[in-house]
Length: 285
Image (cartoon, rainbow, N blue to C red):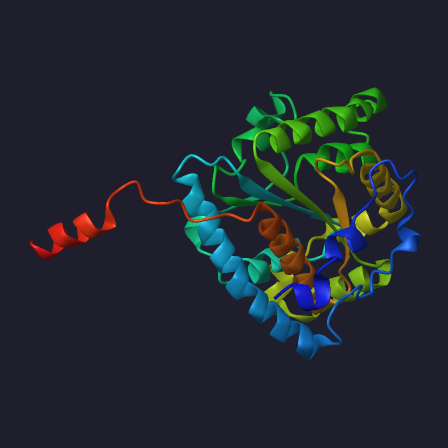
């Protein structure tokens, strides 16, 4: 299903490892690289992707019962209102919830702060055969921590290499890491925040701090550009997904997930029993 529009979507959206400085101005947040022609086409294409995703998810889980260690970790990062929660809702639709592990990382608790920053991340990793989804992640420790000067500069600067080593260890352990930066514009964020104010049923999503954080937009942009440059590796590359158009965002991430699952090519394990004999015994009962 993904092959019609997005056969090469990974290479199109991927931040090349070792490619030098990243400038988000080079990435159009309203773009639709290799995407469907419009919203209607995207919705139909995304629906078709779900069938294939569900089949591959079942195969991934099935092969884990025979000892295969492989699993998938989808990491979602982006500015406030970029659509991390919406992405999870749409992309996970149709998947078996027992095989999907979603973790939303909030402000660290006192216990979490007492441990190294990767401690809580390790606890949330998917098991063999699972698809794990991180709504925010270990990257908060080189993003918000950096922007708000929560730790010394020398501390967060060391974390880039620690993250790269951590993600390499995940890859070595059978984890396919798919890291997505949901790229929205400053103007689109304002529109989405205003939409929350316009609807009483969305007020729970809004805080005064959202307005304060907008003042930090340039600092966050600089922090994200550093992350994309320093932590896009062969083992765990970053993908920049334009997210101003929600229909494209959902299609693109579904496609990226599908392409990675197709690369894993999970297979149903063969039974270690005599089918004919088992059938005959069952019929005698």
